[in-house]
Image (tube, rainbow, N blue to C red; front, top):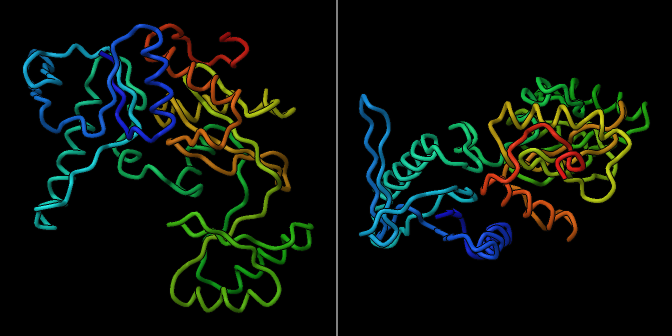
Length: 297
């Protein structure tokens, strides 16, 4: 049985599930994989790991692969808030540990750091990006108004038009120029701010197993970036990740990373290739890592 862990309204889950079924393979979508009637037992002994998983609560299920898109949710109705938070945390911890020990293909079998922080900011990804040799925009994190203004002035002198304020806890961002620096200084009296150099139009790419699927024609710099993108995925333990690249002062740079890809960021041809590649990984049809999409084909 191939398991898809996620929501039925998720186009990525629906696309993978329909392709598995179209290939004549048994597959199920589970929004809450450990909830009744599922019966789950996991034994850690000297002989190794043993587990039993029964979707119908009676007959054991042999798991061929798992595609992880969501960690599930425990309905809070009838729960004390403290007890609900505890049970939700316990359930997610069990799921993380169980997936880490499965011998079958699992997308994505992530570390605890990414499991509990699935929407990291670019600053959070920066150490892995730099280790992978991938260029990134220049970033300043400071509560000092003078340091912020110096950074913005440097960008303006070089024609960037100002600095972009990018909160670490949200998706909103805004350009800081001219009179808005005084408002930013007031904010800095309360907390540090993250400033990033502006970038040009973005282009999305998806690292999916042994392939990189670009949305549209790959940029001229693609050949130089792709080895670093594979190194990024390997360092993060990801079989699937979305990145966006865009021009900055020093050339093309990675400006966005997300382990939970959004298919609506890609046009239909790229979406189809991403879903096909995912099913190839789950079924073991293409097992070589480090090839471009053209080489893997």
